[in-house]
Image (cartoon, rainbow, N blue to C red):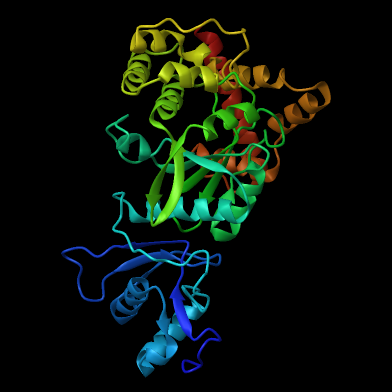
Length: 385
């Protein structure tokens, strides 16, 4: 099998993303190349002779089968089975450059590449928000977020979530799924160690989902992660989105803190034309004070449209928050979702208790615990009024 030449006579290195992870202290047999195959599967590392041969293929572009030694042909046969070489020299995911990691976490960087390639395969436009791009753009000191945030065409966000599942992520159950309240699909990893949040919008904007995404997609720049070009917001748009995220209300947290407002003001002041981007994205309503402080210019009046997902998130407890969110739904959907919130499906109940850190083993027990926790939260809040 290892001696069988491909019809093209050449082998080309391919991957969804790849990184040279060698370091000065890499021991013999240690990881040298981290890559993701071109079919659904886990990331893995190449070492030793395999890593050396794959790097040679990258340097050459393609290598003739006839020029390989017997040992190299056996290695190529294994690589073909791993889907990291291909006989097509024009393969769309041919690797022509093997970069060093741009991020301190190579695996995290590879997740960006995989997500971008999966979206590309399905024709889904997307922009990666927050995360390490904020640091490289001078908008924050911290490099990493705990996950990868991708904002995609709102008509295709369910498609992207589904497309990521074969690659090792599972969509987190959510009682609001299928409603306008549901704005983010959280994808939990089986082995990648990095969640992906698939957004159809960002809370706090007054524009509808399609218009907000259209405004965002027109304000992007390119970065490369694991050899793959991905789109991120340009500096001004990213400063606005990060500022909105910084001041977002959290259930039970009370009014906007001075610290959150100061952080948002600092990010807005660090970028040019933030006022224009805030107007285009529909962020003026929630950032009026911070924009004025950062730019020295009073933002223009808005039409009074309420920011998405803002009012219910600012409620003092989860019960009131859910009640407020329910009022935004049509009557029949409101009733159906309300019943689902009170007595959720098995997967939702179990996921809720898992997020709360409670060792519940059955769905029935999870539902009872969820109801008890909600009642205690409401009573505790009421007693302080």
